[in-house]
Image (cartoon, rainbow, N blue to C red; front, side, top):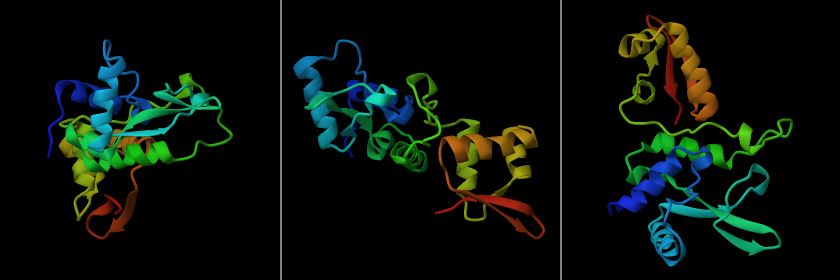
Length: 185
């Protein structure tokens, strides 16, 4: 697998922290032909994807396509994987981008979702790893692993993991263990 250059890594890591994994704006000083060359290589490697810009949300445009429409750049699962963001998290971010916004909520740039990237080595990443195990995990096991209170673990599952990241988490009662949670494949 090709390793991203410093500039490519910077673009991807910044995209990972932005709502919807937007790769724009590019780093300061990367303009013109140099920007086209770097972006072109990243698109060819499958690290970036050119998608229609949602101008109502205030997404920055990469290029104009005419009639007031344009495209923007987003980091793909492969791009996030190239800088070490786990595939489950990357796919959750991608599915969140592709989800249609709820019509009753008017979205402005101020209302945009918080960054959905997970840094490796965090307690949230630890919980995601535990949820991926075939045997699943209980709240008590997550409490012991993270040092969090039980209500914090449950809130993290329902809020950050299910709602913000869109992870398909299922809970089921298992005799002798209690409620066991796991990411549904």
